[in-house]
Image: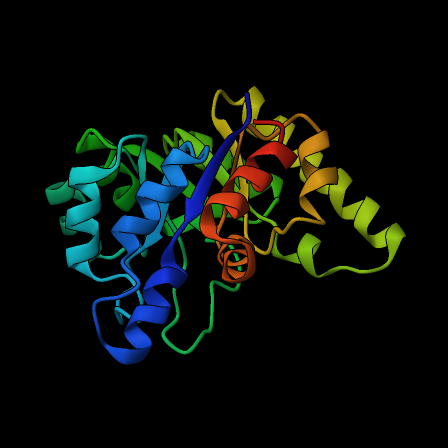
Length: 234
């Protein structure tokens, strides 16, 4: 079965627009789980632009599936992860001026940060580009899972370019699995481009947020989650 991680960051984005109490990310997580989500994903950014520390604490208490905490590999965030003990930590790059995550990590200098997560007894995932050298480093430094950045794939329009990128993603996924790690994909995936990627049969988990929350504006969160779960073959 292919698993669906639902990223609920943009529920919090809408709430923070008024600095109020609604919509509540915790309630969103409950709806997502009731309609097929296998995991709830949140990114606690250093600038706290959407998800707040209080949200993660509450989610840790109520999430019934798995809680995946995306975070920068900083001392502050590692301390938070050790305290909250999410099911998975996904280390991601982060720049304060970016609108959203713009690419994958370079793992070259992150061995100690990765070890700190593993030593805390937390499953470790890393968000990287589909590049062989980075996949090798993920395995060498003890990652349990590798999430491949699919932003380039999501932004392509020409059929030949899409097919070439799919082959690149397939190669990376096979390399991840041959290294004994879980193959995950995410970023920019939507109800159109997910089909070909899921059909590869390589990736066992997809983390999807923006397109699900966008669809939910019109059809409701329950329908948006259940439809995506069906499309990935979960």
